[in-house]
Length: 204
Image (cartoon, rainbow, N blue to C red; front, side, top):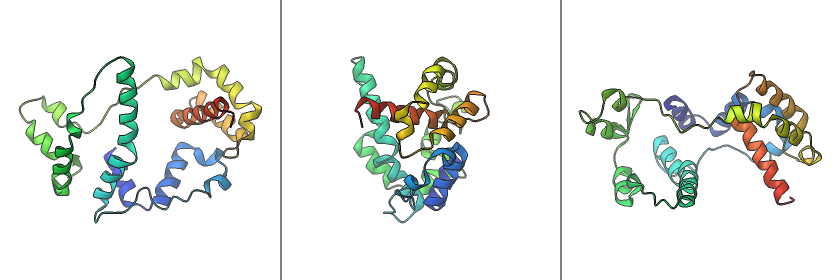
């Protein structure tokens, strides 16, 4: 995770985008003409003097955090739970933003100050761990097994074939390889599904 974040921050945006498409397999089924309409020279706007500041600002204000907060709010309110996010207190965020980069990331270790503050308070295995695990869903099982008949029908539908941004034949081939365990593209497949269902729902 740390290496990929550093690479995204330092490499040219177009190169990052092309590498991501190659790894995920998107380049095989997305229409090149459609891609050309959306230049990706930058992953984020360069407003600050360092790559780390630009990276943090983008994910704090534009990319990751707003989406996470959106889903967190909807999920908590659905069950009448009032969630609190103390690390997003504006005073704390403003303070940490002004701190030098070496206090945030050093020697490949993130959250340096917090890790030091927690020394002796939490287990060392937890305090020093570098991997980050989310709350994963059995997405691959859903897509490869439980929902496969419905998805094969969706991918072969006339509306799916009319979309201007992908090659339906190539996508169907990629989906079969994914179901066979040859590709790990569950997230990309999921996005194609949700986009198509959204367009069908609103008759676009």
